[in-house]
Image (cartoon, rainbow, N blue to C red; front, side, top):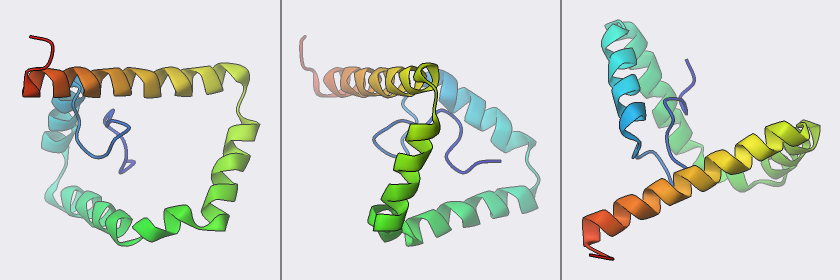
Length: 100
């Protein structure tokens, strides 16, 4: 299981998509206690290694991965980010009462 799965948003670990939350809860409930512990340990490791995401090596790896993607894969990636951004903005506007 990937620690960044479950359709989590571009802006962090807040799953603001209702379907993603439901999917996460279903997956979580199916896990054994040891799987849950392993999942959370991987998440905590990710928090601890946060500074590594801006190293030259990490940036090079992401660029290399991007360059290997097909045009369709790149478009799907961009579309996913746009949708996540739109959902987050909609959620913020609803929460803070903008546009009402």
